Each structure stands twice: as structure tokens, then as C-alpha cells.
Image (cartoon, rainbow, N blue to C red):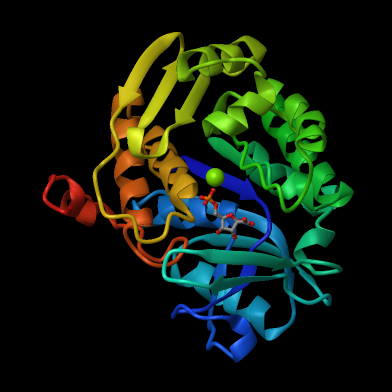
Length: 311
Ligand code: CKP
Ligand code: MG
């Protein structure tokens, strides 16, 4: 069965369910998240096979992470580490304004290293999916991602990269320097317009951004345009995918959901049109439900949003 392998960090999330300042003792709900594991869960929910590689703490949060991944049918290749789990705290300051902070110093996930990447697992995959978050976590995680891409490229495994720029983690300059070499070796790139401009400065529209990325090497470039859907250039063919109109509840995780939808259909042997349609549907599920991945659909549920009556 064609399998997707991804490498990254899963964090414990502490999210305020109700609006109000943390400083006044808001209640926090415990969960897990991480761009790469979000994608793995999305693929598994659609019936695909996904493996996540990373370091997991031996603390309670680490156990929670392993239980959740197992419950979602994601295979975890976890190197256990005595350092604590990273935290992501989400304050809902008002009903429309959230503030996010990472607590990610000396934690298990950021101690990932190139030695943690099992060659046979990566070489045996159909797709390797990586994001720009993991290389931003430090030299070890950056080397781990490079190692995974080396193995995949050497074995003819499709390499997928979501640029996922995080200004809280590094500067645009550092991101460009680290991610450009990875992008050049990728087959498929997902990016928002701002993220794509890191690789193609000066490009003015999605078409120019996608062509710019294609000219750097990848045969597939998908520019995600939020409410305006997506523009893709795949093997020199253009595709335009409208967004599925829904009421936006929480947009975090939308990009991962989109990538999961696209990649699940790629694994299933579908062409770019079907990949983009499912990607847009998954993005809509992610933004119209609470949580980064919890609201993602099973395949049988895709039809729920396949109408225009949700607004
Ligand atoms: O680009 P997205 O909004 O889809 O990414 C969301 C994820 O890994 C979220 O789950 C969070 O844990 C993170 O990105 C991150 O570290 O920012
Ligand atoms: Mg993203």
C-alpha cells in the first residue's frame, strides 16, 4: 500500500475554549498538534496510510501524543526522549483575536537528529512530506529533515514540502537560506503567497509564484489563496480550485488539512483535479471546526460540505 512518511514535532496544546485573558486564570483544554502530524491524521482519516517520525517525551504529554496518533491510525516511529514535551498555548483574548505562544526550549521534539531517521522507512514510502517548521527548530531537526530528503530523493520517493513559514521561529532571511535548498530538491511545494515569495521574491501573482517555484525544480507548485481557493501548476498544466465556502471558525490547521487532502488523493492515484478538490474540502473542514485537526473528515463525510448551503 502506498504510504506517506513525514518527519516533525508533535506538541501538546493548551487552548482556551472561551474568550478572556490568560492572566485571569482562563481554563485551558489539553490536546496535541503539529503541522506534520496534522497531515498524517488527515490522510489516515481519508483511508490512506501515514507514518510520522519524531522524538516523543516520556512525560504524560508524550503518552497522550502516542495514544492520539495510534487512535488516528497513524504509525509513529517515535524516538523516546527524557526531555519534556513542547507546549503551544493559545489564548483567546477576544472572540476574534487569539494569541499563540510556543514553549519549545530544551524539549524532546527539538532534539530530533539525523540519526533518528530510519532509512528503510523513508526509502520505502511513496511520498515524504516535510514542512518549514521542523528545520526552524534547530540544527538537529534541520539535519533530520535534510537527511530524510536525501534518502527520499535517492530512492525516487516523491518529496512534498509545505513552506509553513513561522515568524515566531525564525527570520525570513534564515528561512530562505535553509528552505531554498530543500525546495530545489522537492517534487511538490505548498505555499501561501507570502511563503512562496520567500522563494520567488518579486513575483506578483499566483501564476508567477508557481512558475518561479517550478523553475527552481519542483514539478508541482500549489499556491494556497485562502478564501480564493488555490492555484496549481503541475507538470506545466494550470489548475484553479475555488474554496469551499464555509463560515470560518478557526483557520489554524487549514494549510495542513489542504495538504492532507491533496496528498491522500495523490497516494490513491488520482490526478491533480481530484487532489485539489479534496484539498479544498479538507481546508473547509479545518476552518469550520475547532482544533487544528480534530474536525477533519473521514472519506464518507466529504459530501457534508460538498454543497453550498453551509454559510
Ligand atoms: O499552516 P497550518 O495552520 O495548517 O499549521 C498549523 C500547525 O505545527 C499547528 O497545528 C501548529 O502546531 C504548527 O502549525 C506550528 O508549530 O505552528
Ligand atoms: Mg501552513
